[in-house]
Image (cartoon, rainbow, N blue to C red; front, side, top):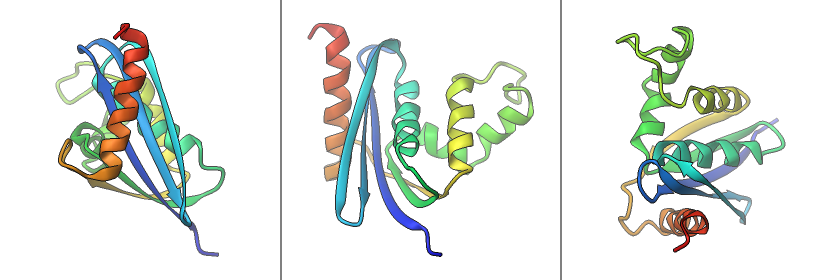
Length: 149
């Protein structure tokens, strides 16, 4: 049976790093879109980028073929270059023996990705890509809920 094809667009934002942050995700399947967003009061941009993908994958209720569009080289490289798998295999330590940052989220992401067929497509941020701009706007709006702006 063919897998359901899903497009996922994600972005994270942080006002200060660390500081108040937000994430935005758009899921598209068979012409239907679902927007999701959230945030935290004290976080980092990289955590928000990871949470955007994690929350999008968590919303899928069956195995899918997912194309994940993100402007985060941190997320793309962490998966496609095998960094996260290596960190996990080495007890969440990098080659220099220092702890890998965001191990909790990388572990969640690896677990979720194992349930799907997936590919990552890197987008240049703030370059006019409509879905990336929408995700950025959602992420910034979420971060502002915590910053009082």
